[in-house]
Every structure is written in structure tokens, then in C-alpha cells.
Picture 1 (tube, rainbow, N blue to C red):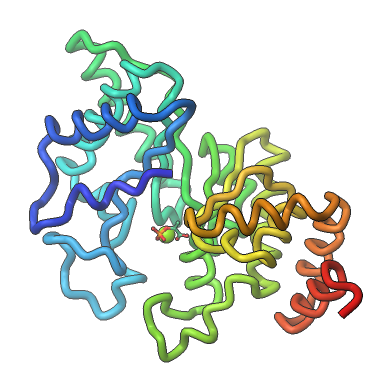
Picture 2: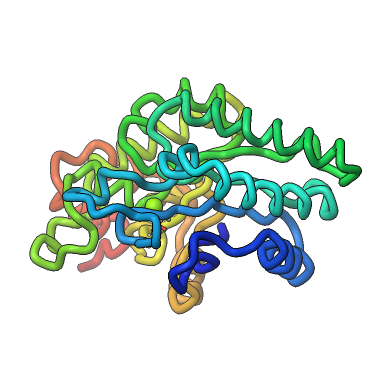
Amino acid sequence: MVRTEALLYGGITHKSEKEQDLYYGRLLEDSAGPVVIRLFDVGGDKLHVLTPDESNPFLGWRGIRMLLDEHDMLHSQLRSILKCAGKFQSRIRILAPMVTNIEEVKRLKTEVAKVQEELANAGHPIDREVPVGIMVEVPAVAIMADSFAKEADFFSIGTNDLTQYTLAVDRTNDQVGGLFQHDHPAIWLLIREVVSAARSNGIEVSVCGELASDLLGASALIGLGFRELSMKPSSILKVKGWIREFDLETFEDFAKDACGAKDRKEVYESFRKRFYPSQ
Ligand code: PEP
Ligand code: MG
């Protein structure tokens, strides 16, 4: 998943469409396979020249909420991404951040269709099947994943924000850092719901955020059915080596325990019992 907010640094409203064209074009040229491009996730901890002074920025004008209000910003980004999608057929997927309501997904898809039409009329090749997916990072979306799966083309679970919003812990506040527990049983239950809704509706689900970077997190995710994990590069070797050491059943048994645990302590006890039985 490509975060695009870096294009907005430096006190500008947004990069010109030409600069964005170059950026997305380079991304696609220098990679192979599908590329998930997340629309600007501005607000919260990602401040921008348009971000107002809010008393609760994480609960405020963030991600898709802002994009749907800022027509020019959204349209220039969509135009640029969709032009690139036309050139690199079947390779680009669009991802919407901070979705809370189905209406937001519908409105975004309407904007995508409008921009596609404008581009086609102007003679640009377009990818008619470009998938539009959503970040699952607000608990309401995870709880109603079955309904969202009927509107979104794919899910990407954002474990950083899903943890923050589910446990009501500011992810940037060190004072409550110890309560930011992305391996809390409530998170596993929500992830399990989302996986099940994605499966029964036939859409893909992936996971991003920091959860897969640690051995416990990666183990439960494998047990819940994920076959692709996203993590910081420095964790890849460690996690890969770990996954190879155990069979799938061990991961699945652990994931069941994690979802049934009454608290985080039980999750850790099960992890020790399943993966370090002699200790
Ligand atoms: C997340 O919330 O897990 C995520 C991947 O998005 P970000 O950290 O950029 O908010
Ligand atoms: Mg997020």
C-alpha cells in the first residue's frame, strides 16, 4: 500500500497534477504486479495546510471526510491516478482512508466514475475495472463489514487506527502508550469478523499497520487466514524465519485462542503454550 501524504508536505494545498502524474508513473514503472494507492489521508496526526485547529483531530476532518469536501484536491488526485491506471492496465487499485459510512464509499465511487468519464471523453485510455477498496480502521466498519463488502472492492485493515479507535487510545500519546495494545482480544475479534465478511462476499482482504511486525501478531494473522503480511523492512527476516518453523495448524489454534481470550494476558499465555511448549 502506498501512502501518498508525502506529496503534500511543504505547506502546499496539493501537488500539481503534472507532478502527481510523474510520481505515480514512476511508481508503476519501478514495480511489478498490483499497486494499491491510498488516497490522501490528511488530518489526525498527518497535518496539512488545510487542516483546521481541532480539539480532537483523530475524530475530526480526516481522510475520506476531507477528500469528499475538497473537490479539487480529490479530483486532481483521482485524475492523475486514473490516467496512470489507463496506461498500466489492471495494475492500480485505489484505497480510501478513514471510511466510516457506506455513503462515503458510494460518493467516492461516483467521483471515480465521473473522472473516468471525463478522461475517456478527453481521449485518455482508462481502466474500467479499477478496484476501489477501503481501509477498515474504524470499528463501525469492522462490525458492519458484511454491508461494506457489498460496496467496496477490497478491504485493507489498518491495524494502527483500528487499535486506536477500538481501545480509545491516542496512538501518539506516550502517556497511554502501554494501553495501545494491537494484540488485544477485541482487535482479533474484529479482524476475524472482517476476514469472514470478505470471504463470504468474495473480496480480498489484506492487513497493514504495525501488527504483523511482531511474532505474536504475525502468528495470529496467519492463523486467521492471511497469506500476505505487511511490515517494516527490518522485521521481514525475523517474521519469515518464524513462520517457516511451525505448521499452519499451530497458527490456527493460536488464532482461535486469541479470539476467545478474555484478556491480553490469556493471549500471551496461549502464545507461550503453543510456540514455546517447553518453557
Ligand atoms: C493504519 O492505520 O494501520 C494505517 C496503515 O494507516 P496509517 O498508519 O497511515 O494511519
Ligand atoms: Mg490509518
